[in-house]
Image (cartoon, rainbow, N blue to C red; front, top):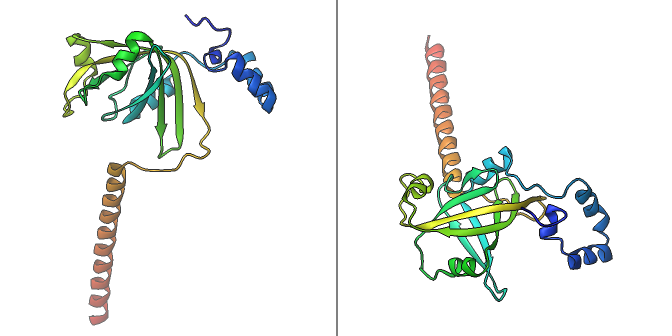
Length: 210
């Protein structure tokens, strides 16, 4: 259960609010708080956004407060929404430093940052996370089918609040596979047009000869 007065208090500490007041944005954010703060439940739109991503950044901090960010990627759908407050994904084997797991053992607070460059959208999700080991049933549910990676364990993320950012300053970039598909479709269209031009020329020449 969220112990804060507003869900956005997970980020808007008294110090942050004092800075907002000094710099002129507190009134606007106070209106957000009057409406209940940020959302805590995963909506249908957010679930669709999450499960469409192929990349995510997971932030943790150790017992001393030292932050750490880890990137995780996979095919679309590797991030799965399990219920209105839970996101799960397979933690694939990597360099085996286990910094994230160690941090979560000391401090379960965590943060997810998702960015869709093509549509210039980003989502920030606050919450807590835990590592699940040796759960074959859950692993089978979360492991992307046919993906060539070795599963190490599972990370379950419990959402406490989330917010979206405006697209300002997000560069528009596209996935290589999407670009390749678009170019292939363009090439097919050019080929069809060239064939149609050749057909029309042939028909025109035949008409002239007659």
